[in-house]
Length: 528
Figure: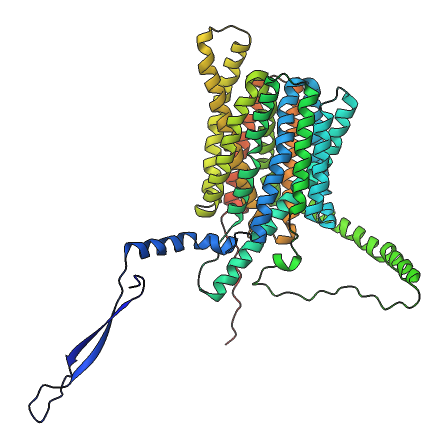
């Protein structure tokens, strides 16, 4: 018997008010009773179907939905690319000292101002190819780090700064588009099955998956660097191997599937007809047709692209100076300055021998934080996740003062060897907290800027570009401070930056634009 099918039983009962002339028993009435036998196995199947129903809707039966597929491919390509770049960034301030700080300051300064133009290039080249071109600039920087030429190293920093703006603008746009594709798929399935069901948000899930894969780069890159340095390899050999890894990451980006404009349109909105330019039939030879195409390109298409570029540039500036983004830029500044602190100022305190292993712990907590924060964003909201993030960040900043003090004492050989183990443990714990807080903060920022109720879809690229501009500018300031200021002075600055971040989030939440508030359409008035 099938355990999931209901059991039918027929019960014969006498008809009410019916008697027989012969005095016999009244005729009976058949009553069909349906009994559902719910077994432990069937209830378990129901529970599983409810639990994984959302994933089936988002990913599809083949688990190769275009949106999710692109996020995974993008995550692995960034994993390889930044395994090379992140390791180079961590070691360059230790191996090349002042040159490393100057190069990173140049890189992030160019990165900051290039964000004005990045959305325009991203739109014209498409996010996929803008990301590939920008990623090649990262490869050049990693390769140049292996040479002793200062001019080459600084020139590569300038090129990388421009490429980084395109990479991160394209990355934010691609994740948002992938999330919209998945959400539209869920909406369609819900309209077919249960029209009254509440719509779901997948932006937090997708950004969490991306950053979980991406932030594995800290573990892989620093493990590789620690092993290669332990094997006695030179700086050139190390950066050459890292360059090859970066190029493989760029090649993986070619597998990203293109997303058309129709796929990212909200299915609830009416699609406006688009007027596409048409050209009349041209008589004559094949050569004349080619000449006509060249004329059309230089007279119409090229001028159209120039106008579009200027229009996108204006939109970027308008988003940047909007009240919402001006307040949000304080949070972005703290994110960037904090990044320069724990990747530039703290690594020399740890030392070259222990740096690779400490940064592995940093990477592990970054991956864990990305997965946890992505789930928290979708389940309990952006407000609670941001508050939790700021609490962890506060503990990490406070603990770093002890890390700097005891690290200097250890470096100057002022302590007994019995203190080495506790101090090394302090290094691991403190960097783990910074990794956790950094991934939480980055993922929360992406969750806020990428949500459909915070910025219009057409301004998503501009919003991410404005965020990356402020973040990279503050990183440039942080690396520049590392050249002239002591670590203790930088600690005071980051503490002030943290307090400003707290105040900005309070103002944003209470007075400007609540991060969890959904925009509701105004009901149309009915004339009676």
